[in-house]
Length: 423
Image 1 (cartoon, rainbow, N blue to C red):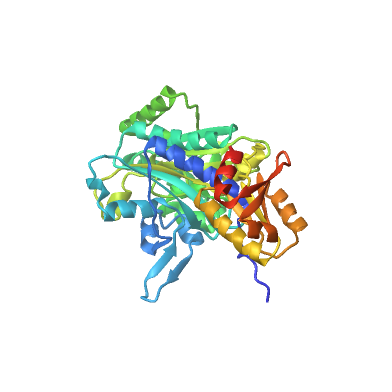
Image 2: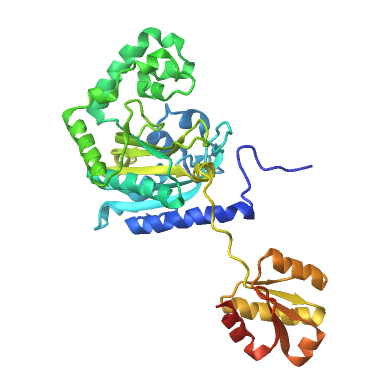
């Protein structure tokens, strides 16, 4: 029987993982600049956590979660997104008691959704996200957006667009909800069954429907911004002022609602405008989620965050023909000509690595010519050749691969000579 990688997943081979490591290093550096600390949460949680926070009328909860019953007869779900787990941890570990608020956190790791596979979208995908919990200051909204853009720009992306909207507070959304029901109800039979069931439960989700997105009523649906109360409108204006103050341009989109129920007030997406990127342009999405802490038994702790797919970031870099730094070359490759020389070479290899020198050797008992070809493939700067005579004389042959010069070096002086040559 032949085994293949599960549908909707991928193997990231060494030739590609180096690109991931470079992107992840950029993420860590940017988060350190902004004083966001890493948090690592479990890959599965109680199913109810996601039902309560993400929303039981969302596509994620209704169609996309990987849910199973464990041996204790408890319903568990592989995490489909990161915010719910981070807020759960914030509440459980009483981070709201920390002297410095808001608590600024970031995470990076695999998420799981049963989606139709397409370019840049997988059923297991890697998501980087940040959460700032404990502050209702509109300036922190602008900071979170700035951080996301900073990651993309430092990674090398230029063709970017920030799209912004406000979902308002509970009062604003209630007025908008009633307007949406009145708008869609006379023609709801023309919509998919999901939209029909959402009409009275959560009509805002209709605007996020992928099946009926081209229906004429979508374009003429009441805009949430028209129903913002004075407080919500003022908050949104302040967010925009902070973005203006640091020179971040944006477009307003009153139909931007995001796919999770916990969002309120600020909602945003960052899109690629590169011609070679493809039809689905969204790279990153996020927003404010005041109320999630209270929903899971915690105190009032307003929060804002975003999540970005690492896969889609790499696709965007490819579309803009961004080149990555090559993997570091090998410092030293050891060529051994017989069994005794191989043992000595193995000891030398260990000494080199202990000294912080990138080194490797042959483990396939190949002839000298084949070993030298390996050294060339690895772009080794230096080759150490050890044969029968070198073992007897306690020396090695040291070859500089850049200029082709070769010299005999005593074992006791080898480290010193190699360090000098590598400089």
